[in-house]
Length: 175
Image (cartoon, rainbow, N blue to C red):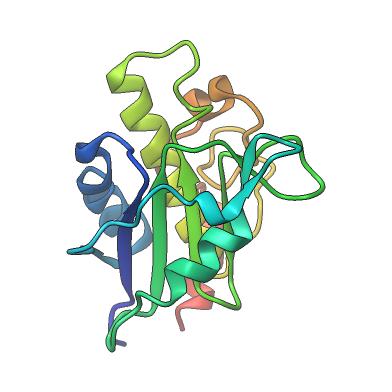
């Protein structure tokens, strides 16, 4: 079976090394081929909601999909802006299986952490969103990367990899 290719795109001004540092965990834990985009997107002002002072994930993901090239099956943006979806006060990231797009934000993952903690949290959430793109749902195991994190501490508790249940589910999905 051909390996799925995930395009990684910088959106706004996330720390430059973070996008590159997602490659290894995505390949190792999700079995996909990550490719860093040659172009970066500017700050997503088109997605800004002035009432919330946050950026709407879906608007960003719609823009990301337009960057996919032949041979690339999914796209993930890494941004520094605070994200939201309508029914939630904020999200660390969001993925849409239908459009094959996802976005992860550093904005709230920075809380109470240093550069190493931010890198790991972004890796955890990037792998988590890639899991959704591949068809995985949330997991009840708080150590599994597919657990729904609501705080940066939840991210710190999670492993970069899948629990046995989720690993088996991913294997089924890849058949």
